[in-house]
Image 1 (tube, rainbow, N blue to C red):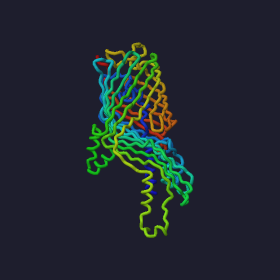
Image 2: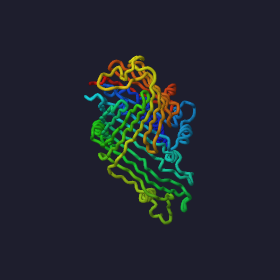
Image 3: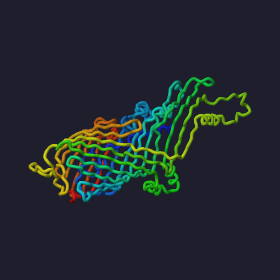
Image 4: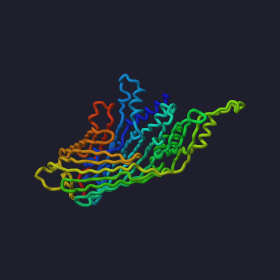
Amino acid sequence: MRLCYFLFMVCILLTLGVKAQNKQILYDFNEIPQSLSVNPGVETDFKWFAGVPLLSGISAYGGSNAISVNDIFASDGVDINLKFRERALDVLTPKDELSTTVQMEYLSGGFRSENPNVFYSFGGYLEFDNISYWPKDYAYLVFDGNAGQLGRSYDLGDLKTRGSLMNVLHFGVNKKVDRNLTIGARGKIYSGITDYSSTSNQGTLRNTEGQNNRISTNLNADLLLRTSGLQALDEANDSETLGNEIISRALFGGDLGLGFDLGFTYHLSERTTVTGSLLDVGFIYHSSDPKSYSLNGNTTVEGIEIDVLENFASLDRDFWQDLVDEIEAEVPFETDTKSYVSFRPTKLYASIRNDFGEPVGNGSSQSCDCTAGSSAGGELRTKYRNSFGGQLYMINRPRGPQMALTGFYTRRIGNVLAFKGTYTVDKFSQTNVGLGMNLQAGPVNLYVMADNLLSYNNIAATNYASFQFGLNIISWGRSK
């Protein structure tokens, strides 16, 4: 029983791990080169930029929509088992997430072509993405068993999980079509290191009154778990070559896939702008180390039945194994090594922005529509000191799309400092206030962002917290 508690405590801690990658502060913050990663059609006026390796883009998100660390581990004199039951087991539902997403750039750069209206970008990053929904009926089975639950049906479809670790290489093109429209596209090559998914499970486990014994257990199962890379990494760990195996699978020695991103920026008027992007439309073909596990069938059992008179001569028989064999014959557990395809969690961003105040760096009396840092070779819109607007974010998940709405305000102080404040409402929090700062010190670009600032006085009691930071070298102005 202690092991069961430990396993489910791990699930709770994963809930408080790292949340789905809504980068609402970074989105449309076009002073930062990494804004291209969430909208390849963002407006840019860099001649070129280079991210500092391993420091150009790091993000971490922690969130839970139903429970916090403090709920379970607070020193309040209440027994931890009681708190777990009252605040987790009896509260969480199959719609509550246990999710994690981490991204780390190790390569990032971009340059303007001979045509000043075209900008190329490239890079690579590692990504770990996991989502598991709280398996409510499984949790009750683990902690309470099904004794005394006559007539109760346990839903085996509560188990939904999906995760992957991969390396992503990408190359993008950003083009200013005319004075009002900028579009962009980016191609991606996915190199999968590990993958696991179990999202289409169905079935029930139910106790009813038996004929020969007091209780009859009915099992109707259609369960499937698909994995790739896990066995290869386990074998490499045993042979102490785990690092080499991870590097090999990350550099096209694992599962391969393709994807793309699209984005645009369009000016409805001089100071009103709409943007949108569609990210990670793609797939991975898992063929290098696939392994699937399935459990499919129906059976009804009433436990072990022994007729002492009839079976007197064979009482030393393993009746328990006979029962197991009988169940496995009706509901076979099978494994195979067939290849399979997984699709990436596609993300959608959209925004509308209104600019106001004086132009940045040009002075209030200057009326030209070009930034102070740009050279000849392409007309750029004026940047204004203030902007406000709204953003929409959606991501495809196993139990349907998730959505977040954000209101934002941006303040620019010359060409050196810019701040962006956000207020976001989603399933994780309705009081999520965030702040981002971008500092341009000559060619050095530094940005820092944090979310849910109101919760920082007690991180353990919060349902959501995140940060992002990065360091780049930028050359400003369009080349001729």
